[in-house]
Image (cartoon, rainbow, N blue to C red):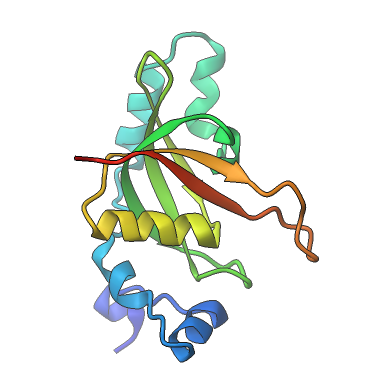
Length: 158
């Protein structure tokens, strides 16, 4: 049976394989994270209805990532996984539901950052959502030009 016939998405990457070979298997944790549902229209409508200005009407159609929130506190309230074709990543990226700002603006962003994906997957499987954190970016890029990111947890769910 193929993936199409079973409806199961298989997440594979060299990074996941290397981690498994080193005795660290992220696959069972990833299996606990829900697949992104086909609720894109609901998310778009929600974002459009929360627009406070004409410029906000563009928000659902802007491909925003976690980078937009570097050094700004966010509250992560949910995640869903999606297959990624980025060769050097985990083979998965996350669709992340967040709340920001003093007026509790809801937004949906994405991240494929290895550190952030692993942090969020682990927080999800530990039941640590909602998770208050600040996305941080390394000051210096890697040899390949990437600036690694991580999440600084600023409040722990009690």
